Amino acid sequence: MTPTVKAAFAYVLPVFAAAFLLGALRVTLIAPRLGALAAVALEIPLVLAISWGCAGRVLRRWQLTTVPRAVMGSLAFAILMVLELLTALAFGQSPTLFLAAMTTPPGALGLAGQIGFGLIPFLRQPRG
Image 1 (cartoon, rainbow, N blue to C red):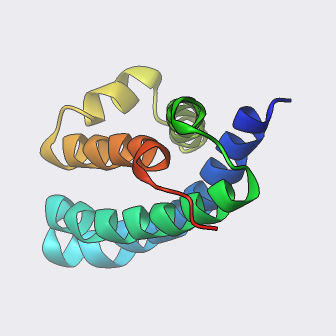
Image 2: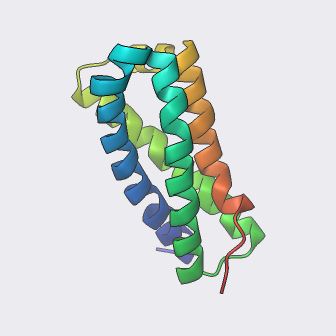
């Protein structure tokens, strides 16, 4: 496994775990009170902050240059989307409904956050 692939997995897995926990709180506690769109809007900055910190740790471990960082982010985004689909399937949602959910305002906002997650390794400058 190349350093870029290792870095992508090291980046996506803890962020996905944190986002899964935050998502459970969003769905059970926040969305019923504020609505789905507001709940997603509150969750995204937290997940992106976690992503930023995690990317920094990963990039200190694997000192990747610009192009490998972009590949890392793209691969991490692809892995994230597979994990999201598998989670949806595990909760009884079909692939069609999974994709259709992204066309709703909360789903589109969530997808924008996921794209931001994928861009962070490219944007994040590693610190020594």
